[in-house]
Image 1 (cartoon, helix red, strand yellow):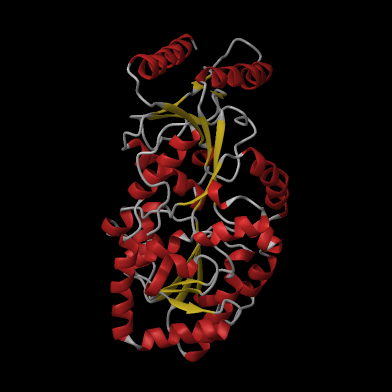
Image 2: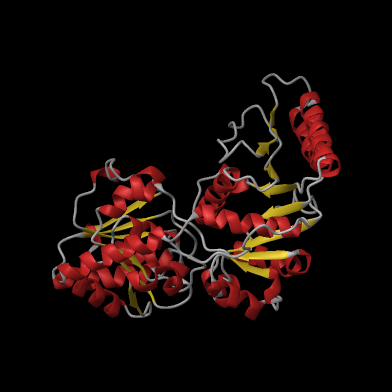
Amino acid sequence: MARDLAGTFLARWRQFRERVVEGRARATVGVDVYPFFERMTGVGWYEWNLLAALDRRDDELHFNLYAHTFLAPGEPAPPAMPGSRHMRLRVHHLPDRFALPLRPTLFLLRHLIEPLLKLLDANDVLFAPNFFPHASQDGHGRSLVATVHDLAFAAMPQTVAPATLAELRRHLPRARYHTDRFIVVSDATRADLVEYFPVSPRRIHTIHEGLDPAFVTGGKGPRPEALEQPYLLFVSTLEPRKNVLGVLRAFELLHRWGYPGRLVLTGRWGWHTEALENAMANSPARSRIVHLDYVPRHQLPALYRGADALLFPSWLEGFGLPLIEAMACGTPVITSGRSAMPEVAGPAAIYVDPASPHGIASAVSALLEDRDHRIHLAEQGRRRAAAFSWDRAAEATAQVLRQAAGLPPTGDDEYRA
């Protein structure tokens, strides 16, 4: 704790000296990194890749990464962070055989000492990469920048888990008034934000997500469970918004039409999956359906590369990272012609009506029968995926954070692939 306080005051002194004596335009940004402490999905990987790219840059921004500052003796150590050049995660692990009563001491540390340490950080900006800041971080920044990934809870509330829906409805309308600048990951989300929450377009910055280089250079390892080809692939959380039931119905048609392969569903079970589970258990193609649950990220490229196609006919997406991951691996993509999907995939995908399992199945069947079209789609997909860059996304994000901190701009504050 003494070293922590000394380091905090030293950082404050350096910041004062650089601003006042050296005249450097420097700012401190607090960032919520709670998603790194659980199995990461889309939002977690968005934040990880973005922070890693920001740490490679020199934008006169220093980042304080915030999760639980004080950990109990039995809690696991924090995971590695995406960068260390301009980033600091403050963590204190209470030792084994701690002399004081653990629970009251931990409560005191987390509710009194932790807020005090954050207050001493004196952040110019608080960055909330997942819609709104965590309750323990609210107010620890003179201005607020938030990333809005999608407006499914407003546009299609029936597809969002009740607990998540209640939390978003409670926090996001209030965050609208306290957020100085919004980052959205697509123009589709930008349009939804303006429609459902009257926000001035001048406060909104469209910054596309990037492509993890592992999906270009990786994929040489074994596929999970030594999965045999051929197969069709779905990658995402199994939940109503992803239209997994539509994928299943389309695969049943393909199975009836003579497709010899499997359907591989890759992703954790979400909420409201009773109908899907029942449909899978009673499907005439149930022996050809494989559920892999959570697949480690280093195994995903090989899984994409082995697939005949990625089926991604979601009802609504803010961006849809599996689209560019599959395209980077040379896997043809069949997706919905709505929401952000056409914006992301461009001319490198086959578009279908997500409400038509027959249409999805027909698109797959036509693709499998046309080898030249598959090769053409693979080439177009690789070119399209290569246009998405986390470095460019970080460059634009840094400009938004600088503006929120009152620093002069040094580049573009928006990025579209």
